Image (tube, rainbow, N blue to C red; front, top):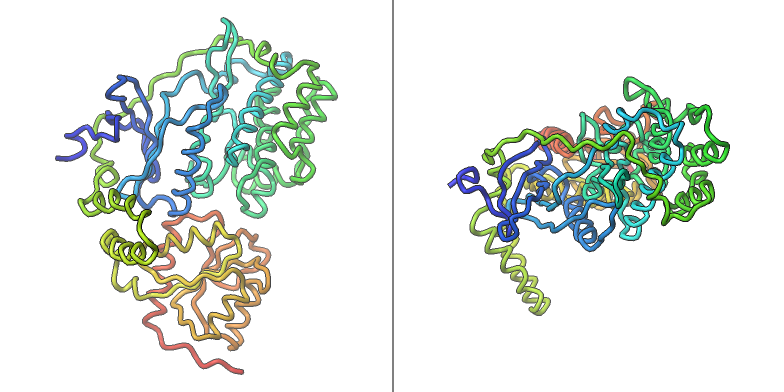
Length: 482
């Protein structure tokens, strides 16, 4: 029977429908069968994210499940399915999205204490995330929910979306990965680096300006204009606000990360000093005027058929998943022997032509290198990893024959430009190269094939398939000139 016919069960939950779905994630409605309580299940579709990102997602979800904080949406449980999909269980969405409330409320310039209390509440919640080494990575008005507060007429600020923190570099939203352009810190535009607490502080500064003015901190119409605004334009001037508020906003929006506050707790302390009250009394300032509106239920479908591949797996997969737990009690030699057989049994069928191809990955960032290696290995390639250009050079000099090389440009020991020149001048075997970089085009790319970071895994796989397939059919590389 299909998942649509079964209504599919995930542990104690029964999926009842799909609220919304894109190419990477499906948000499903569910019911706890014993408690008769509604839940949301966020399902990562098989192959939508690199294996390292999925594992980090599950580790962070497990940590978030232990965190009970009034300013954070709770996480109930998480797991990985035999199909390769992973999921996290969340409570139903409550309250009004902050961006919708702000459109009705307009500028809070005349009520600056409410704006400051909202910023402090978000900073306090993100400070709790930081204790779990979780960086939200996409702070904006749309990621906040306003729920009824401890007394009538007040509201509480909840930060939503923290369960997706590990996925930000690969999560596609409106055709882009990473934080929303309106709140993206300059360093993320310049280098493609991963979000950290300082880029979250910059995003919170953008939100602060939006609360005070009723409009985004910077205005732009396309990606290039957003980049210019964040990297070159000064922080916007907000008329009519106190000098202390202007200083606080200015430091949060500093172009250089080291010039901003270095922790969320510093922002909470700064707001305490500015308002002259302890953080425990900030909740008294969150007056719901206009009153909150109940969220409109999202239309969905009860047909689970589109999730059939994610929600089903074969018997071998289920047996392997259940058996892996017993391996921990075995000796190392026995464990290695059995694991070898289990991996062979569990591995999905891959294209034999792909399995024969060797890919050299030269990347100095550990997380990126691990993610790329796992992505390629999961699709049947043999991968040799190098931590920098010098290590890639040694592999080639020692006789490694690769059909394709994925190469970063900014690397220690030997950068990508030098490594490419060594091949072009005949001192190394020539390997068809895909440049993966966050460097701007004006630096010059030593290959015609370039993937900008953060990259889409499916695009990368398509290029590797094309380049390595062409190289395999080509003649052997010329001898090295000593």
